[in-house]
Structure formats: structure tokens, C-alpha cells
Length: 345
Image 1: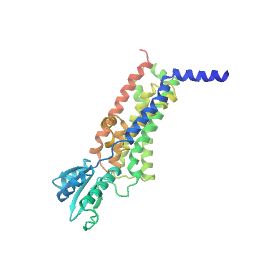
Image 2: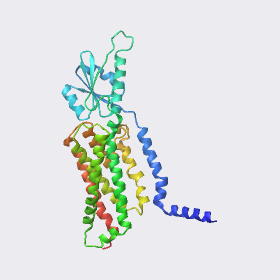
Image 3: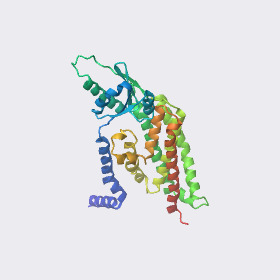
Image 4: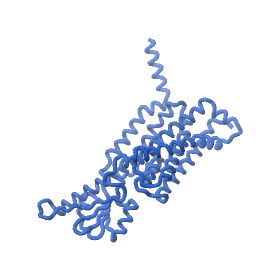
């Protein structure tokens, strides 16, 4: 009977905790559905530019499901390659094609080289008596020996910073509420926005140290590729950390304890990881690509890739930086509004 009583109490406790029930049964289904969409996406179709005499490869490449763009001059093709509009540019030097890969995406690199290999076999079948054509391969960014950690390292730096700051800030701010510290502050003449900014500045000092430590360790100790400015890396990681901080404190207002705060991870963090660029975005459904534009980690990861792999500067990362600032300001405003339920005027 005692065991039965304990069992019934646990059942009633779970049944009345609607949030836990939803996260236990619905959240896994949502995450699995998202994972299915990511891993079962369409095969990557490369976009290849051709110029000059290399136009003879166009039809053969298109037969391999590659999108082909014909450029009048090599300068136009190189400009498109730098802008990320194409995955590779093929020019003809003598009888051998010269292939310049964008290089920052191994999936795109493999797709381009496979399409080119099949196209060459189609144009010059084995046993036809023609000599073997060996394309000359070069890379705009990265190199042939670019490792997996070089490719995914910038994304994971952003993911780890966002995850740990979100969790620690949320739990810490929740503890401020449960211990009564926040209630005492709300009873003072302090305005709500002053309280929010004070907490953000206080926690923000530690996020600066964390962003600096993770960035330095990843580049100097782990040896992740670094083609750009460390200052820009620090700027983006700091903005990403502030965004995670403000989001964590916001969601802590809707959690009653640390467990409920942790329960936000499958809904807030995991989907952002799938949509961060860790997997080829071009293979995802269009609506899912648009959803990624509403996730902070996506902008942080893309900016870090531009800096660390492509060696780009402020002009390339400015939009991502402004968006992260916008996310932070939005979450701070929502934090101020969320404090209304703790203060009765």
C-alpha cells in the first residue's frame, strides 16, 4: 500500500505539471521530426561557374544536376566566388580545366569534384584513346587538408558559448527570484529597466571572460583554422553571449525551478544547433531555411565562419553583428515586461 501511495503521488504530480508532460512527450517528437528533415534533405546540388573555353563543360555538368552559370570574364566569376554565389569556378588553361573551389564547405567541395569527375568521363569516356585529363584544383578559402574541426569549429564555438551562457544565466536569475532577492529589489524605487540592465551588466562581465577564454583556447590550443581577426571573433562571441544571457534571463521568468529551466534546452537550444549551418542549409526545406533566420546561433555561426575560415572583415559580418544586437535589445525589453508579473503597482 505504501508503494502504491508513492506511485500514485508521483503520477498525480506529473499529470498536474503540464510543462513537464509536454516536454516529456511532445518535445522529443519535435526534435526527432527536425532531425529527420535535416538528415533526409535533398542531396546537395553544387552551383558551378564556367568562363571562357570552359563553357564546353556546361551541358555535361548540368547532366550531373549541377547548376551552371556562364560568366563572360574570369573577373566576374571570381567576384561571384568571393561573394559565395557559386561553389566553384572552372576556367580552361590549355587542355586541362582549372577548378577554383570556394573551399569553406567540404560538402560543396565534394559535390563539385564529383560532378566534374562525371562530366569529364562523359566528355572523354574511358578507352576512347584520348589522354586522361587532370583538372588543376585550387582553393579560395581553406585547403585540401582542411580538417573537420576547422570546418565545424567556428560553429561549435558559437554553440557552446550560447548554450553555457543561456543555462547559467537562466538558472542564476531564477535563483535570484526563488531566494527573494529579486522581490526585494522590486520593492525599492529602482525602475524595472534599471534592474534588467544591472543584471545584464553584472552577468555580462563573466560572459566577456568566458567568450575570451573559449575563443583563445579554440584557436591557440586546439589549433582551429584562423584566417581573420581575433578581435572580430571576440566581438561576435561576446554579442552571442549577451544574446544568450538576455534570452536565458527572459525564459527564467517562466520557470518555477532549475529543472524547468533545463527543460527549455530541447526547445530553445537543440533546434538552433540543427539550423546553425552545422548541416548544409541548402538541402533543407525552404520554410526551415527561413526559420533559421530567426535564430541567434545561425547569425553567430555564419559570422564566425566568415572570420575564421574565409578571413573576411567587418563588411561581411556587420549584418550578423547588428542582428545579434537587435536580439539582445529585444530580449531586454521583454525582460522588463516580464518583471511586471513580479511587481504589483
